[in-house]
Amino acid sequence: MTWLSKNKKYLLEGSQTMSKAGFAIFTWALVTGMAMAESSLTTWQAIGMSILVYAGSAQLAALPLMAGDFPFWTIFLTAAVVNLRFVIFSAGLQPFFKDRTLWKRSFLGYMNGDLTFALLMSRYPQYRADPSHLPFFLGMALTNWTIWQIGSLVGIFVAGVVPDSWGLGFAGTLALIAILLPMLDGFATRLAALSALIVALLANDLPYKLSIVCAVVVAIVVGIASDRLIKTKRRLS
Image (cartoon, rainbow, N blue to C red; front, top):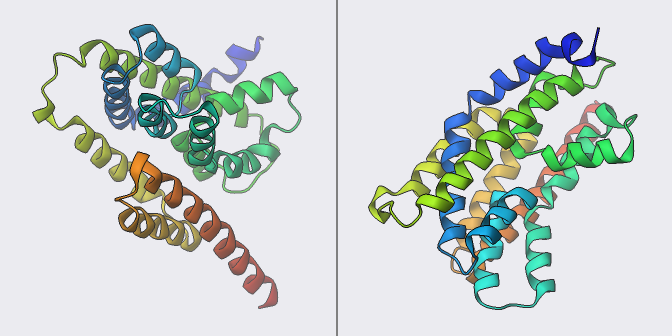
């Protein structure tokens, strides 16, 4: 029996789980694709950025810097800071995939996303030896990647014909909020999200979407600190 036939059930379960968020993923990717098409990038550069970067928030944060001819290190640093949350995600995934080779872990890291990580942790809140980890993750990740790339490519090619009055950016934001809210199932998570919201609003006037960077950094710090505090209190009680 091949690996695929043996794990087909879990692959399909992962794909079905991620498909429930398909509309939100597609809409957000569509908005990101349109933003790239309307920037200083050529069509092929936009396509390459969609496939190679595969990180909506980092792409949107980098675009105005690229348009302003900022130094490469500034653009790179901004994208890295926006994606700092993936350092935390990687630490959370480490127990599940630590026995894989470096290239396999690198591929899994590239395929990981906010929803992919959140949904995996929702299904497996505590690590246990279970062969379904990998196929379930891959089912979600491949579905997420496929929907994202389709939405992004559609956005790149139709950017010039879609009226601004459609408000697709707002629609994408609402769709993401509707999916993310049910995932705030812990005090530390809720506190981190609330902190990010407050900082993003207070820093909204900063140029080059630096409010996103500030919100991400504060959310990571608050989330880690509150989680450690909760664990410490539990040990002492």
